[in-house]
Image 1 (cartoon, rainbow, N blue to C red):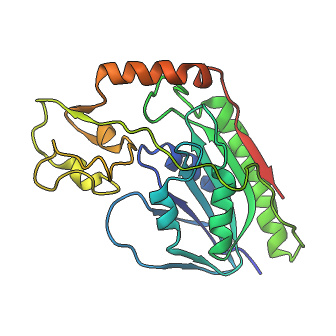
Image 2: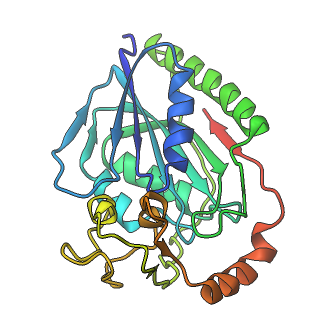
Length: 260
């Protein structure tokens, strides 16, 4: 059995996770496809065969897989399909996210063969982890990609591979995201880019200045895609968040890799 194709799959509101997943895929010498689970809207069921592989990436929200991403991953179905797990986090901690992603994919019929926890820019306070993944990170990611390629070759050669072990605790920590509200300035011209791109459709379809805070997951995608830079977290709130995160996010974290 030869691995015919690898698909990079990601939920990536600010594109940090997308960058890491596609970087890993780019090093694998097989046909490559990609599947973006970020945009809103209905999705079909996706089925992957035993002679395929997937690289699945999500950002870490409060030490967990974002609830929205977890729901969308249920649309994926494997048939003993090899899977590489990727979580990206804003230089704080990834806690139970990697274990949770592993459990989700195993339930969906995938066979995890490797995993990576990669520091990236913090989605709310980009100064933490700024420029990550940097040159050193990318070098380590290339080395990890080569190890993944070796494992895929061994699978193709019917090499017996055991069960991947990753950090995390059960029961998983309680899912929680910061209850922040995005402020919209007068420079907003109503172009509706934020409405189209909001992963959870939390922004009013008729007035981009109105956001359903119960639905908003504070992914910061609307802030990133706004062409007028009209969306942001209020300065005083940002000051408080920055102060709260400074102690746990200031020290450089290194990528961690796990391979069978």
